[in-house]
Amino acid sequence: MLISSLGQGLLWAPLAIGVFITFRILDIPDLTTEGSFPFGAAVAVSLMLKGQSAIVASLVGFLAGCLAGLITGILDTKLHIPSLLAGILTMTGLYSINMHIMGKSNVPLLNQKVLTDYLPAGLDLDLQTILLGVIVTGLVVVLLYLMFKTRLGLSLQATGNNKNMSAANGINTDSMIIFGYMISNGFIALSGALIAQSNGYADIGMGIGTIVIGLASVLVGEIFLRSHNILTRLIAMVVGAIVYRLLLTVAMGLGFPPDDLKILSAIILVIVICVPIIQKRIRTKRQLKKYLEQMEEPDNDESTTSEESTKGVLSGD
Image (cartoon, rainbow, N blue to C red; front, side, top):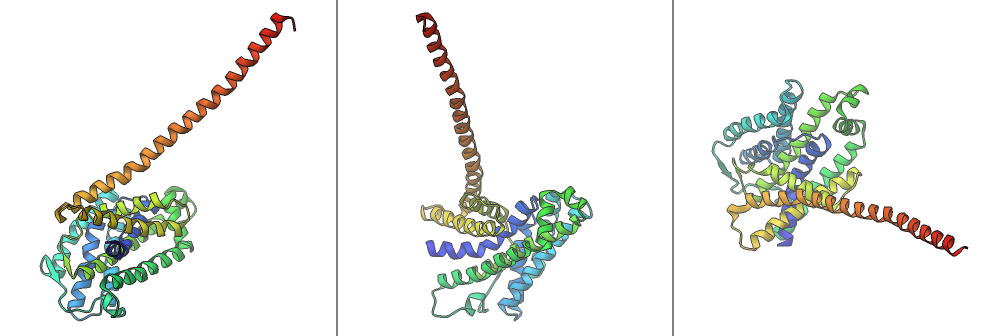
């Protein structure tokens, strides 16, 4: 159970990282996720069925996600459509595009060579999945870490922190937002391509609820690893994806049917949202209690000193 959750979590990690870029770095709620995830899967599977290698198909799936992000970014920045609505429009349009690419609602991978087949054959399938996840997710984390250290990455973070101040300092904020949309949805589509190869098929409905999965992974990761360091934050997204998959696996092990996965995802998201709020309230109450106790201590000292002085006067000292 643990090994399987670890492998699946690593394959879902690029999705969590993609959601992290828009949700945390740019502070944008992007619903393109639910369209770009199956878009990457559809493109990758269709190319593999036409004879392309799994590596090329996965990379093209990543580029397809970047294209989806580009469309949302243009709708948001150039046409001034609210980001939430822009994501919904792109997601809706991608549904029809995915149907045209696949030709039907579900396309299985028959005897095509997937990415895990490039790994040593002596390994168990779960171990192959873990190794593939480590390689792909490791590359994603390293490349993003290096990118965030460049002028481009710093400009992207600055745009998310304060758009107006960034524009005043000469940063093309529209270009940064579009770039953020593109790399975010690129990694989300890459995750879709990986999951499709792991499952052995691409399905038109596989994107439903992925935004909940991504947000839950982001919030779970931030509970376990809190830091302002970008590398730690990226690693936290990977940890969050793994822990989230483990929670779902445990729930399935307790007897929940597969049809309840979506509602379980929603419940987990509610819990991880509420936990930091409850922790903050408890911390605030403790600080307030400590402050009131400190305020009472001088008063007690003053009253004691006053009583001693009064006794001294009355006794003639």
